Amino acid sequence: SITSGVGKGLVVDTGMSTRIGRIAQLINGDAGARKTTCFCFPDTSANQTPLQQNLNKLGARIGVLAIIICIGIFIIGWLTDRKDPSNPDSPAWLYMILVSVTLAVAAIPEGIPLCVTISLSIGCSDMVQQEVLVRKIAAVETLGSASVICSDKTGTLTEGKMTMVGMYAAGNTYEVTGKGFDPEVGGVMRQDGTDGRGDMGVKSNLLTAILCCNTTLSKEKDEAGVMKWTPKGNSSEAPIVVAARKVGLSENIAGDYPRVLEVPFSSSRKMMLTVSKVGGTHLCDGGMPLPAGTNYLAVCKGAPNYIIDLCCEQL
Image 1 (cartoon, helix red, strand yellow):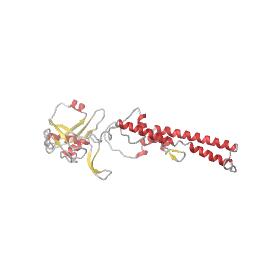
Image 2 (cartoon, rainbow, N blue to C red):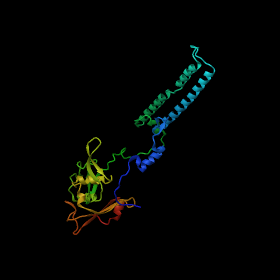
Image 3 (cartoon, one colour):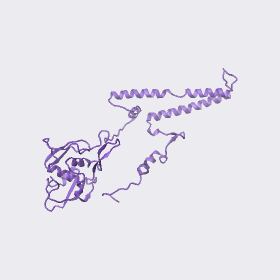
Image 4 (cartoon, rainbow, N blue to C red):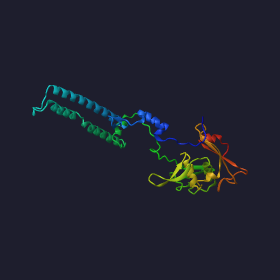
């Protein structure tokens, strides 16, 4: 069995054809077939609130009871030969059909939806006073029935765009400006407000970080047809790639340092290690000098408490 490493995956199925899709089908029942009621109408009970389900059950019970009573009245009136007083010549069965249909229509509780809507509207008004905005009126009853609320912060409380706002290099602290994944906006500033993109520590730090990343950054069209910078890969590596592009490191610079070894990140080690080939007297233009005879550079990134415990000196 494979426990770690790097490989390529081949997609053979998507959507409901995958194992996860199969699980969803089993949860839906009938092997995922479309549920119907009365042999023709789609079953929408899965998306109904508890109040809607209870109202449906109440309506069904009232309907069945009304039909049984109307059938009983029809049979009794027919057997006792009840005729229309205004038209004694008409058959009894025809008169009793009219009476039964009239009773069935009168038994329909058409006032229930109105009463429920008014009650939920009052609930919405009370929620607004508590500074809670409800977009769907049916959600008021569901929220009142909930005992546990699970919320995912990504995309709701946050934008889902991790951004680098600061860095520490060569004994100095820098502020990384800009927002989102656009490398053309913002830069790296020193504490005194001057441009620090050309500092040796900044370039060396971000270049070594790039050598330990597998994420790429490119411009792509979104659904609206607008060109936007989009990262592909690990979301935690995207801020590193964006910051490296802000200081002038090209998108293909990692290709100038061939990777000869990679130890991927794991939950037990809490770190990732890469070994790349290097040459020359400096790491890059404006970067830190390399000791004579240096052919390989090992870069490790991960949880600070794990990394710092393994360090013996600081550059």
